[in-house]
View 1 (cartoon, rainbow, N blue to C red):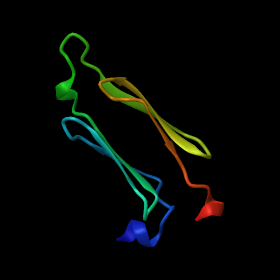
View 2 (cartoon, rainbow, N blue to C red):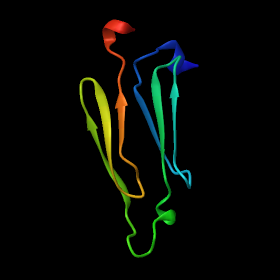
View 3 (tube, rainbow, N blue to C red):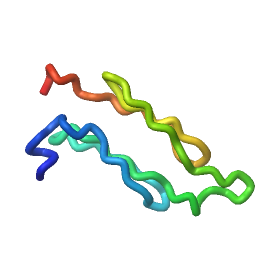
View 4 (tube, rainbow, N blue to C red):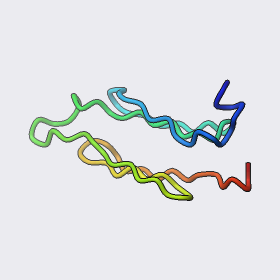
Length: 81
């Protein structure tokens, strides 16, 4: 309810972990919700499960490594709020 009351002010909720990972976009709060996959699901031969988050004026980019997928999350311009 709080995110929706202040729509557009919280662009990303980043959480971990749900074993398979997940994504949802709340059209009312304009918030992206990303849940990272569990490192326990990474194969033993390449046990990587991490990422780097880049913040830009118009988007948030997650550069995943291993089982963490890449994501490009578009932001709603302040003029459209």
